[in-house]
Image 1 (spheres, rainbow, N blue to C red):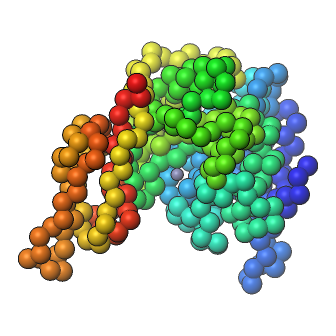
Image 2: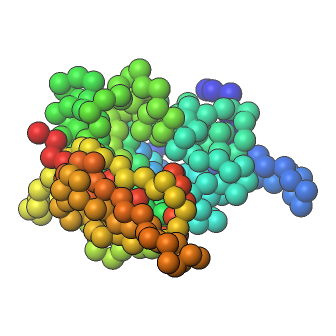
Image 3: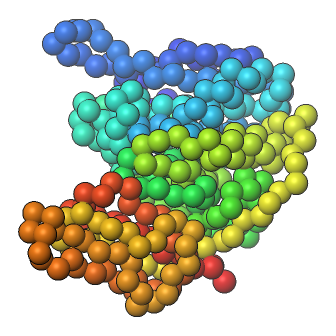
Length: 333
Ligand SMILES: [Zn+2]
C-alpha cells in the first residue's frame, strides 16, 4: 500500500459488482471532518485482465462521464470476464463544478501526475490514481473532450507503444474504438514517460493506455455520445472482458498527427474561416482577429503554417494572446 490518505469503500479483490466512493479527507470551515466522496464502480468476475475506464479528469468534458454512468447501471458482474474499474468523475470537485480545473486548488488533474500523497486535493487524486489504481491495470482508457474552450470530432489518442507487442495492441484497440480519427503521438510515452498526464501515469505503470477527445465546447453532442458508448463496449470486448458482446462492422479510423497550431497574438474577437474536418492549405488565411472597440482598425489575419485537416478549433469567440485557435493534423504516413 502507498501512503495515500484516500481510502476506498471497495475491496478491489472481492468478486461481484460493487458501488461506492473513494474518500478524500477535506477539513474546511463548515465541515471539520469532511470528506470528498468520489464515485467508483468495480466489476470483478472470473479470470481476466483489469481495465480502468476514467472520465471527468477535466470536469467540463461530459460525453465520457455520461457514457460511464450508463455503463455503471447497465452492466452486471456476470457480463465481465476479469476486473473493470469505472471512475466517472476523476477530479470530482472540478467535475461537480463543470470546470476544467478544481475550484478547491485550481488544480488541473491532467497536469498533476504522478501527484503528491499529502498535497492539494488534485495532487492527492493524481497520486491515488497513479500509485493505487494504475498498478492494478492491464488497460487504462481516459475519456476527454475539448472542454469549454476547444472542440474536436471524435478522436482517439495513442502513442506508438514501447514494444512491437504493445504497438500491435494499441492499433487493435484503436480499430475497436472505431472513432473517425486517431491522433498518434510520435514521441514520448513508454515506461520512462515524464508526462504529467494520466496517460503518462498509465505508461509509467505499464498499462496499455489510450485516451480520447470527444466533442467539447462545454456541450454534449448526441452523435459523439452514441459513438462513445459504442466505442467503450467495443474496447472492453477487445480486451476479452465482454465476451457476449457482438461488435458491428467498423467504419475505420484515419490516423493523423498534429503538424500546426494556430495561436492568437492579440486580444480580440476571432472570426474563424474554417471548422473541424475542413482541409486547409499552407499559407492560407485561418481567420481574423477583430477589434470592435476600435472598429475602424483593420483586423489581423492569421495563417496556417502547414496544410492538412482542422482537427481542433477554439469555441469561444473572445480570444486572448496565447490562446490556441486551431490544430491542424496530417495523415500519419
Ligand atoms: Zn481533457
